[in-house]
Length: 410
Image 1 (cartoon, one colour):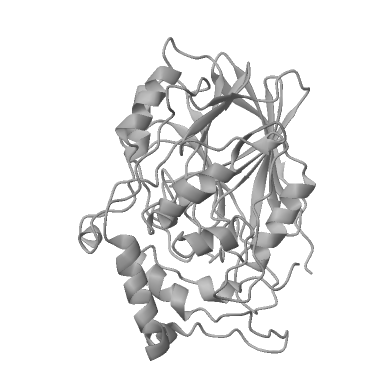
Image 2: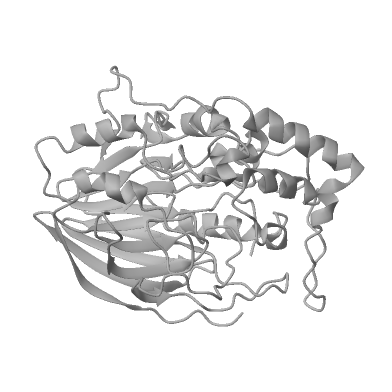
């Protein structure tokens, strides 16, 4: 396990709130704390953010980043002939894609996940949203771009690059700083590789496709914030912006008969947490006929759901993979018992902070013709669950699945 990065304990029970995220950011110590197998878990010093040396830092920072207009929602310019649609490794026998969500925390576990993603040798890597604590410039550099943060002494983390391209979705934590670092610093460093260099990801949504499959990424983060203070009384619904819907209409003009893999930051539904069905209702216009395979994050755990549908939303096989780099706080209360869970990773993660947590990890996709293999890999590089799919005339059929050999206790 890598060391010298952030500790999980300082990210425990992080509320989904801009104000509290800014507060917790200031309460974190400036360097890793000593850890010992014989010592107990260290309680998070929440009151540290109210110290006189810090209170005059986080309040102005919150006001500076939260007051004002969010960054302009970027779309693909007319000069971009791709219009955000990229061909998946044309002519190759297989295409390898690595997915991780809620990864950009800067923790030792996030660094380990990045190492295992790199070992997978992916053609494409996709980070599915959230840069902690608040997605500002220094955090974006430290937790995603691998740039030293001058305000602390942690080792930075860098998102692993795919040989053909890397992409990132927008999450609510990026928008806690009005999306400025996401749109202005992250996206220019990403995109398809041209001439040995990334050409830049020009918008927060995109499509990777071949003759059999489409991987479609949507932005549910842009509308995840509202007017400060009022957003706590009227929570945003995380719906898709009108420009994104227009792009989808062009993408599906004339119909499409390929298998769909959908990516978003926010979860459509959940057994344990709040669901965000608004985007699923919007997607009904495009996916009313066949269920989709939908990967999401936001909720920090690994969950494999059977086909499910909420209200007027589409039907989907949900895959929650929000276990990239944040503490995996094992659930204790079921909120929606009707959610059909097939698999949930409930193993206790042996860690040097003596915390009762679950395992971090990521997912790998291997596409071969009309066949898809998905494996869910943990922080030690062990496969936890796997499944295989086929796509024919837009219809997805799962041909195999199963729990892999459980990782040994370390």
